[in-house]
Structures are given as C-alpha cells and as structure tokens.
Image (cartoon, rainbow, N blue to C red; front, side, top):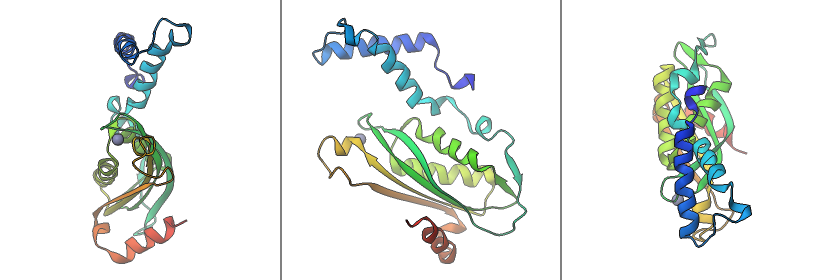
Length: 194
Ligand code: ZN
C-alpha cells in the first residue's frame, strides 16, 4: 500500500507549480480561500494518478484460484471507474464490464475492480484503458479469452461544449477466443445490456 503514496517532497513540488498556475490564471494564491488549494490539488492529483505507483502483482497478491467451473464465461458488470484524459487532464468516468473465459485460473472479483482502478488512475485515453485491461487480464490469468466494454463521459467534451452533456463514449476490446467466438461474444453483450 505504502508504495502507492507520493512522497511529501513531490507533493510540495507539485503544490509549488499549482501556486504558479493560480497566478498565471489571474488568481491571488495568497487570498484566504486559496491558501491550502495548491497542496490539496497536489494530493488530489497524486491520488488520481496513483495507478503509476501500483503494480499488478501487488494488486492481485495471491488472489488467483483454481478454476473449478470448466469452460464458462465469467462476467463482472458495471465496475465504476474514474480517470483523467491525457489530452486535457480533465476527468472521464463511467463503468466497465469485463468477461473472461478462464483457463486454469480465476481471480477474486474484488481484484478485478482493483485492476480497473490501477489502470484508470493515471493519464489515459479510454481506448487504451480498455485494451490494457483486456491484455493484462489475458496475461495475468492466462485466460482463453477476455472482452472489455467501457462506457464513459468525458468532461473535456462536456465542459467545452464539443458534445451534448449526456453523451457517452463506448469502447471495447477483446483478446484470445473472445476476438471471434460469436456465441461467447453474444453471451457477454446480452448480459451487460441494461
Ligand atoms: Zn480530453
């Protein structure tokens, strides 16, 4: 857990830059309401990017189990995630659903949510997040196939009026047999449909 934390020296360095940014946008960082803002913003950014300081082995940490259910699709629906778009450093957030066809191993369900968090908590683009999740689950679980579907709202689009506020972006990625096994893909999409 401790490895995820940003050290205090880095926090105060980020805060120093935020103070400069406040001045550059025409604010007065010494007014009362903003006195603690640079440090708070630095901690918020460190939290929103903590995925850089996590690694998959620590996250999974012995939560791999023997697959006793044979060749059956495992589906985890609607895992909430929060990320930052790497083009504007503004939030995008939504939910991701994951299906995998296990080989010999399955993983604890709560770990899947932690893996999503690990890849979301960094600067991302939604397409890459989706693909990374498919790839890392494929590799870590030695699965036969993985399929990932993410749906998110991007504040960089909503705030700048590029897109209607309610619009969301859907991406998906598949690996292994889930790339082209139509029956399994249908099973996945039917089960995540709302
Ligand atoms: Zn953006």
